[in-house]
Image (tube, rainbow, N blue to C red; front, side, top):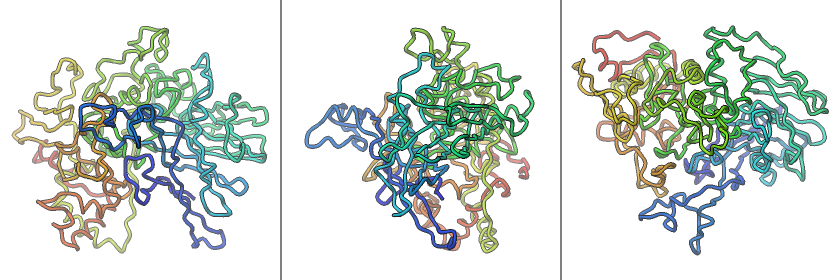
Length: 624
């Protein structure tokens, strides 16, 4: 069995390609208590490189330049190495495993968080291998399938061919005699065939075999080495593959009845497709379309370039991958979406997005498709000058997108695809946390500790005071330099605070400095990771957007930079009343607070936050 997430290895650090390692656990059926741990190492060289010029004194000016991510160029500066620095990745999101002979094969979404975070230097389609006999990883057999796909010829008609689609989220695997394997690409809507060659998985260039599936395949099983059955989660169907003939027999055998077009359930499913696809869907015209009639390959290039990645590549099930990524704002731990929208107050209670409060909605993240994943996004069709929005004839640049999409921009109405994705995000729910009887007394006492010390920032329906309470007027535009609301204070695109002239509630502060923006670490990752400001100081001097605490016991590590791997370590670093939680609260208070924090979920009674008071000091708290 696997640990789903990678773990920080000894001597490892958040934000580095080699900072974490995977875990596999084995036990004999006759003695399930005899558990053995097997570690999975990062892949040192994925076959892809990154330009690190902005991190090295040899290529960047003026000094000083943060050298954290500059490759070792001793004994003398090596410009070629700096501009083509080999990239690694650590095994993460281990969805599946299969045993074939003496070895276990473990597909995973291998995380590559070092800067620059874009296109082919973010996630990889890796398969790690363990030797059953020795109980050790077989490092010489680990493989990154994307490195092989990179050398595949590009198809002449990309929207009619599965050729050169990268692995994105490989989530299932099976095998049969003769060293044959099939691997599911969830976001690519295909199954990839591979074979053992000299002990390593090989996709058989140039004759790569991909089987088309229904929408968002998540599982596969092989029967007698002749037929394979694939579960399609969004299409609610089964795809049947003829392995001998290397072809799909039936793409969508119904496993249940899809929701009726136009229904709420249909809208949610459409949004899930947008979130999980690495290909694309039409921007509009989705409302009355049966889910199985949508063919993401026909809109290849919208979500990402050559199906490189999906929203789910970093947000499994809409939650978080546990990674710290070097984004344009700086090191940013992935944020789960379970508290992006209130489940009590609905879309009217939306958390301000990102650690630096620089975005307001799911629509804003269309910029990620374009800026990070190499896609043209889901709001370009009406603004393109060529028939094919993602491949405009003779144009080397992306087609124009809806001009109302920018940070703190339009939140609804940019396109049907983005609106349905927003609808799906509103349904992402937190996990129910365990509440052992033995900790019931401590949890009850911890409520009081929380209310007295934490609720002002971490109260409210989303367990955070962060909320878009200011006007969201799409008529105002970024280019015009007009603030979206006269009461909103923006600094470097960060929503810092808000004052409403209609209420005598003072100023509502969004960013909180709690002592976690530390630039004196031996290895300083507090730098900006992409764009024109790459290599300079990251955002954080003003504080950070308050994270939600829904199911927080599940969402380690903590803080914007992943500095705390446990809640106990949070107590060591989190500022409180002139000290830290650890040295201000008593040992008993800390014990009780920990018990309460680990139990917080969607069923826990709520507390009033600063934002609740700001909006209406006399209001009644809703009951969850």
